[in-house]
Length: 458
Image 1 (cartoon, rainbow, N blue to C red):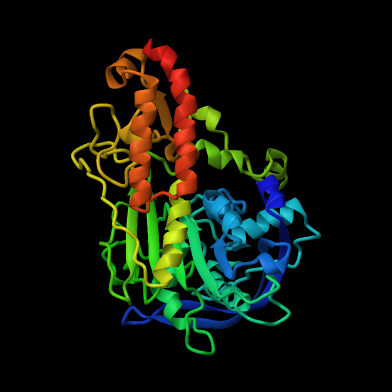
Image 2 (cartoon, rainbow, N blue to C red; image 1 turned 60 degrees about the horizontal axis):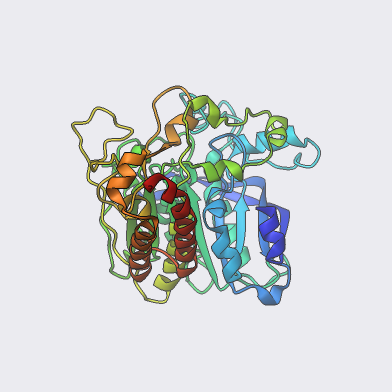
């Protein structure tokens, strides 16, 4: 959304960040300890901030960029950039994994030559390893070390709060919130559950003031040679550790079914989990904001192609509205104003389709979870992805519009449809799951759709 940045008076800048980072491991009591100290690194950050520093409101969102497709993807930025721009927040994305550094170097070997997240150990050291398996989540070689990211995140966050000339924001941030999506949602879980207590500023306060995660997998491995697979393992417990955390799961996030902690309100354990009924892990809007295919190909990567999934209509569920509200609720929680609790999904565990075993209503839509007018005043069925070799198809769902007979049974007129959407939407505003500005968009969309719907109701 470069045009949106420019219209909001923002700049989009790139910086290199260099330093040393520890590699962590687990001790016998399942506590994090330094395994290898002072590994050299150079990575890059993307900074989006108001061009006029006076317009910066003091809040910055820091996202380890998602590397699952082997390129840097600003997935959390895509999900709530509209609210960032409206509020005058800043955003910082961090190149977070060696596999995307390799892609950047293919894209521009000269520009990105300095980037490195190298393994600090000799390659024949028993602690040097290649990740087993295949795929972007597990790809690692002995030459690199995924585990450098934790101190990188801490150091970047601390710089953003500093008054020094190295701060790329032009002014110290008052609040730094971390965030992550999918694989790097797992980075967020690992950071605040394990590393956060180790990362303090000079006054003893935490580097990060809270966390917003979306579509998270399990907490990420603490280093690339340490694998913790069980959700019951104490090292994989989700612990807010004194800062507020809001996690969001979509209906399509089947892979995180074992990671659904209860909500919690005590000061040291502030946690919310919202399960959104309807959207899949990826939607049509996400692909609209990807880098150009030519740039992806120049990085040595094959662009994702949703058309191979054979879906008649890719789901267009606007889950970004819920992320806008969650971001504002997280800020309020930092000031002591707790966010709402959300209903959880209902599951049919006897259903062999592990990709979509939510209990369904008579129209094929999910029961339970945080609701929306798209399901409570439905004109379509939202189905989840289909299994197969294509990761894209598993994470991307379909929207199947109702036929005319069903629409006529549900709505006597398009005015009735719009009125019911309005009622459903405003109830969500009252409950703080939607912002007023986004509610107005939903109602306007329903009104526009309602006129088209009138022809089907005649």
